[in-house]
Every structure is written in C-alpha cells, then in structure tokens.
Length: 193
Image (cartoon, rainbow, N blue to C red; front, side, top):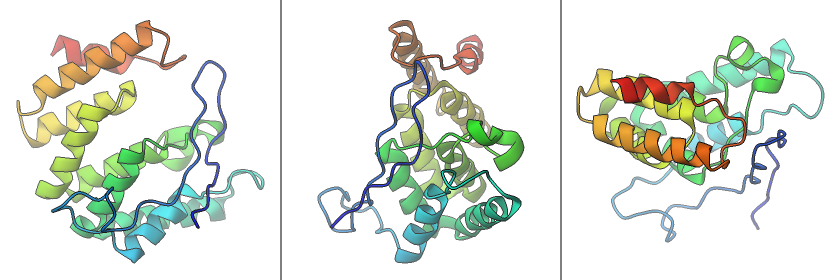
C-alpha cells in the first residue's frame, strides 16, 4: 500500500500543494523504456530529503545538517542519482523552505530547486536530458530562470528556444492568475536575451 505524506502547507493566493505519494516502482507503466530504474538507495535518500519534518518544531541545526548531508550524498551518487531526481521532478511535488529562511537557511528555496542544482553539479548527458525536460515542463519562474542560465552555460544556444517557450507559458499562467503571487522577475531576463 502506498502512503501519502503532506509535504508543505498552502500559502495565500497559491495553489495548494499535492500530497506526496511513493514514487512508481521500476517496470511499471510510469517508467518509460530505456530509463534506468531508481535504485533503492537513491529512492531512500530522496525520501529522506522530502520528509524534512518542519511540523515537529523549528528547523534545528541538527535537522539542517542531516538534510544537507543527505543532499550531498545524493549529489555524490553522480549519474546513479539522475533517475530518482527525474522521477521526483516529474511528480511536480515541491516543498518550499521560505517558512524556515529559504536559501539563507537551507541553501535553496525549495526541494525542487535543490534537486535541480544537484543535477547541474552532477552534469553529464543524463543530467542534461533531465534538466532540458524540466525546463520544458515547469511553469515556476524561478526554476525556468535557473535552468535557462545553467543550460546556456552548459550547452550554449541549445536550450534558448525551450527557455523562451517555457517563459512565455509561465507568463501566460501568471497573467491568468494561475501562479498566485509568484514573482515572475526571473522570466524577464530570458526575454531580454
């Protein structure tokens, strides 16, 4: 039986986050042919990252150190971590760290941004593929800006068109009120370039 765990609280004027369910098991219809299976070790590390417990009191130095250690362990796994990160990013789940100090306290604004940064650090063709997929599918302006900048450095010109398409789609969603109070400033740099 799959267990659901609530991972974030809704903020005013933002869509309520979905609950996190266990990722699909390799070999299910959700795992495309040719995509490596997620190892149990990688799945365990990602689960521990997602389950940062902020409901039982404030983020203590011990909780933060354990979380950062797990993120570093995932990044150090190199290409073996990519299928698990891909699986999580495709789930569209997220957990904002803004309520605990965001980037200043945790190092990133959200779990998705931390995992995207891990992919940039891992590098290689598998990570590039997932970064490109994420750029094409996300509508989060901060993610689009970060991905566009890093992909331009890693593969100049190759992701310019998908970056503009994603920025336009995110801007349209923002104008339609679908992004709540999300700051769209990261999108303007993409349009200028």
